[in-house]
Length: 198
Image (tube, rainbow, N blue to C red):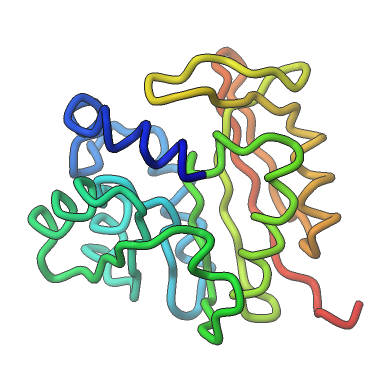
């Protein structure tokens, strides 16, 4: 992940220009993120918050949300764009062993650079900081088979939606919803945490 973070730092200006700092009224992600947020009863953590666009959007809708982002340029940009919203400069690794708990975690295209060896521990880390019956919304690039492709930042991966669902179930989640775009390689899965004892 250090290599991924460095790749984003190197290309931060161009990527920030692509992403922007606010969610457009026409952004198709709104039809996924907003209904999911309505089901979350407490604090939300936006993991890999990037420029803070979704963190800021959810905060504007009244949710108790915080952003976590490893790229310092993005954190600075997010804080300027959304000064009332808390953003932490940190990564997924900083959540390992954390005593904090969240009711919901948004991972909006933030795990796309993890290969099959890296994804399971990442999902387990997110599970460890979610409340029992907490909710995870994970979006990713999908395809008929697992394959690497060149993302504007660095290598990313496409996953069959069924394989991603199995990975979540193996990490202690119960998949509650799956959405896949019929013409584009975009997918989202909503999952709830199973009790740790199960």
